Length: 302
Image 1: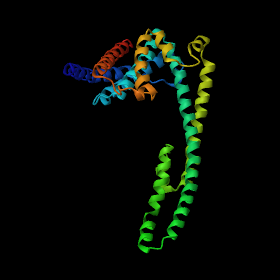
Image 2: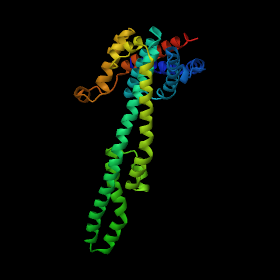
Image 3: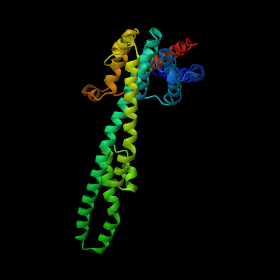
Image 4: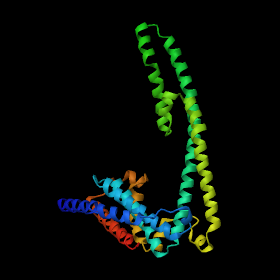
């Protein structure tokens, strides 16, 4: 039984990866002259075409990079991503005005990204300054211990290792706080690195936020009321999936991702930590069919 399923899985992987040339050709065709210029950014059809072209590129990358080795987290993540992509593309087919909903969401997600980036960068500045103070405090404490050592050989050895010991302690703390600039701070010094981030990086981030806020204001003042009514106050994949008759797919896929991608008590305690071969087979069949469906949708663009 397993040998048969393994054979099916191998065949499906081949079928999926063999879609690369079609994805590449369609992406090139759809994306030709599909860039959304300043003049076209309030044109819904332009956004539909642009999103379709970008989706085909993303799918080509998936087929190149995500099927060399199959494991649970990867296959679930790719399946969910392709499902959500198909929701967007079917919304475009149902009503091209969703192209402007897409643009609205694009602005919002980019704005959220830069705001999160600003929060992280401000936190990083505080962390770097904190690490500077902690480094000094640890060094002072370790030097005090060093001075109490009477054995000259041991003292020399401890002195030789002192800097690396202190650096490792700070480096471990930086890793726990997802510090982006800690590596550079090793050579620049934590205080100077904080200065660089605060005066070089933060202004760039702040400008990006301002530009996006202006773009959002311009968008809101330029679109018609019927478009505004299409834009949900809060994006919900279940609701959007139902609009394009993908409610059942949503329920099936999200039940698995909730069970295996999130650290819920049931996912931690359950004996089943990974997908069974039969389940992998089902998800690969789904991925194969959905990519072909998206190719069919792409071919409807002139």
